[in-house]
Image (cartoon, rainbow, N blue to C red; front, side, top):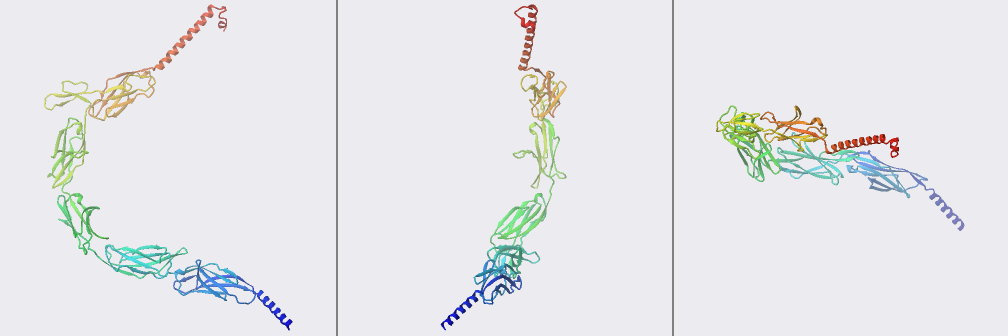
Length: 567
């Protein structure tokens, strides 16, 4: 019996070992899928299913450890002897969008599925709240938009809606919050405003948008009414009349209010904490244009515009001159006039960099001029306090190349003028220019340049200088009181020896000739030395040849010079 029992135990152990040895399995695949589809509408139920495909050596029970990850983070765990597990989401939200993957562990073996992208389309409806339900013009409306069930990063869009106008929109990107806040300014003309918001998020290179939030109503009150701008005596006035402008408003709260009057962006006047602004001035043509009255309080601003036309009282005067170009000591008359208008106070002035110089307080001015009277002149006319000036005219007074003598004779060129206070004749004698060589000597070295200078001691510029050799003109130069010229640049030859002169003239007289000078072309010292040396060498050579010939002729056969004579 003991033998039979031992044999039985042995056989059973071996059978158990044989059974355990044959419990072999392997993972074929692990798969993940979603129901109803990979695109799920926001708020709909969603199931993530993990399935393990396993091959076994026999039909035996095997425990499976299921783990589901979203974007690398654990979202579900289960232990089951079944081949699959389900992760149920009763109401899918956009935050459930992501990459899903599952892992199955059994009997010491582990296998993972491929990743699966699940997109929950649509977003939850945002909630919009306003800090105030009633505001003043110039204040701001603070808004808060929230997407409570969404996960950042998110984009928030806010809209300000007015009747009969396109909504104004602002957007804010929030990287770490599921809400955002903005401010909208309340502008002139805003009365009843509506606001809403919506959200967006970026999903696989696309944007997903939420529906719009509830509309929030905000009423607006005016802090002051639009200003009134009046013009007296009327909007059409004449130069010289006094123009008066008055700007006023009605204010709900007299604090930090400012009224500003401006024309062409130039502020004419302003007042603070007052309801009325006044401005007065004598009207001129420049006062024509658009005037703007603006009332400001905080951020609130309202304005009114008025166009004013100022008619011309009289045109600008015209200044006329008897001559614009004249010689000194001649008489000049300046006349000021207004076309079709006589009742004016006239004055004639000379323009000066330090200010205009008054010459005469009448319509006409007559004076005997000098060179110093060259310049610009204007006239002014005044009627009813309005002063207008003419365009400037230019007067040029020229001096002459002359010396004046109170004598009874004249030479070269002369003319007569009445001499103030006497019956004698004032006659003029022309002063000749002077010509000289720049080097100071009336000679120039052969082959070198000749530089001449012609100078006039008197005369009003510009002066024209002409250079001559005989009847040949070299050059004409216009300058102030002198001019230089290079006759030949490094090519002076013996043929350039001769008589040179120059002539000068300005606007006041004909050409005046200088005294002629004779210029010689000479050799330089080194040139003379070369010639002398050449002559001496030539003479020495000739003497040597003559001596040689003489000695050979007279002493032929003499033993003293055998070699010389034989050659």
